Structures are given as structure tokens and as C-alpha cells.
Image (cartoon, rainbow, N blue to C red; front, side, top):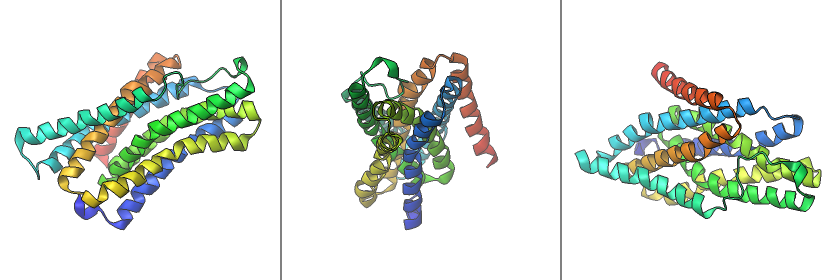
Length: 266
């Protein structure tokens, strides 16, 4: 892994993280040009994202973490360090989730008819801040996966991008209906996604100078923990909230199948 940390690899990881973050703008554009949100599609897409993230976490990232950690420790000791990093990643994202106010759900499609313009604009702003805080560790996760392998990183980028689309809708709808400005709504939406490349820059500044096989293993295991938590805490509940249980579960299975056979074939 350490020989792969070339300038090109780092720039590619940063680019992938930027693409994933800017996908909130896609959700904003969808909110402008579609009168009715296709909740069946969102249920399936969010379920698919969860399936991709869970599969990659357990079938790719954790085995890669064990392989890297075995250069530093062996047997049960290596497994212990990987497990601590895995649950540490879960704990870190859970702490962020606890700190962020629960009354602003990043995936909720707000009823814009029941609030005044001032409240709507504040809602959009609070959602942008909330989503930005959530997206920061996702940016670190996407960046680290990009350093590891494009085969692992590209599906994660797609999954994160799909995850970000309803977040973009959630931010842009109240801002647009409060201000009447598509430009402002799009800016709020994109700004919330820019926390992901900021997370990548944080990882670049503080992790790269100390990068070793052990650090690589800890990061991969922590990323797996973050993605599993996001899948169970955000993606699956959100896909269910849109009211299409079977579409959500079908998406999970499809996501796992696509990843499994995709990695097998390519």
C-alpha cells in the first residue's frame, strides 16, 4: 500500500471525494425540475447504497485491514487491533450523530406548505450544516478507499453519491421555496457536500505524514465501521421512511449482488 501513495494516487482520491461531495447538487437540480419525487426510486437507491457499503466493508475493507495489520502484528493481536479500529470508527460517527441535533433529519422531505419563508430558510441552513458535519467523516472514508484501490473506491463513490442526492433535495427545497432563488438553493446544497473534500484534505494533512501498514489497516477498518454505521443508522431507515419496504430490501440485495459479482468478474 505504501508504494501506491504516489501524487497521482492522492490526486485521484481527492477527485473521487470531490465528485461524491458535489453530488448533493444533483439532488438540488432534481428538486427544481421534478414536481413529484419518485420515492420508490429513492427507497431502492438508498437500499442499494447500503448494500454496496455493507458488502465492501465486510468482504473487502476488513480483509484488507487484516492483511495490512499482519505486517505489524500477528494472529489474534492483529484481529484485536482491527476490531478496535472497526468499532472505533462506529463510535466516532455515532458521537457525531449524537452531537448533531436530531430535529433536523437530513433525509426528510419537508412539507414546504406548513412553514413560513423565514423558517424555511433557517431549515435549509440548519440542514446544510447538519449534512456537512455528517459528510466530513464520509469524505475521509472515500479518500482512504481511493488510496487503497480504484476497484474498492469507485463503488463507494457511487454509493455515497446516491446517498447524497436526497440530502441535496432536503436542503434545496426549503431554501428555494423561501427565497425563490434556484442559485441560492443550489449553493446551499453544494456547500453541504463540500465537507467531504474537506474531510479528504484533513486526512491528507494528518494521515499521510505518518502512513504505515499499521495506519493503513486502522484507517481501512475504521472506514468499514463508519460505512456500516451509516448504512444501518441513515440509509436503511431513510429508505424505509419513504414507505416502500420491499424496494428498500430489494435495493440492499441488488447492491450486494452487483458488488459481489462485479468484483468476481473484474
